[in-house]
Image (cartoon, rainbow, N blue to C red; front, side):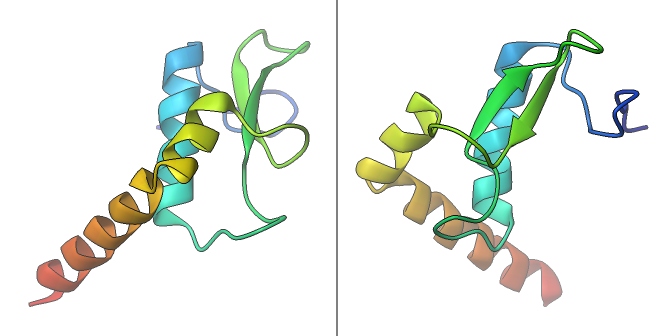
Length: 86
């Protein structure tokens, strides 16, 4: 069951979980420049973490992009989807 904040956003109980979700979203979703989540923040309403497309890119995501690792993760996920269809 996905938990949501009273604001309606999906919540992550810990910062590390939110960072993992941020990276996974950028691997799985068709995101691009100026689209999709780029950072996390701690909510004033629920105290948990949410993803956001606003603000400065999270350093871990920026590092994966600059090192070319995010692109490799995307390709691996695409191949995994293709192989599951067989």
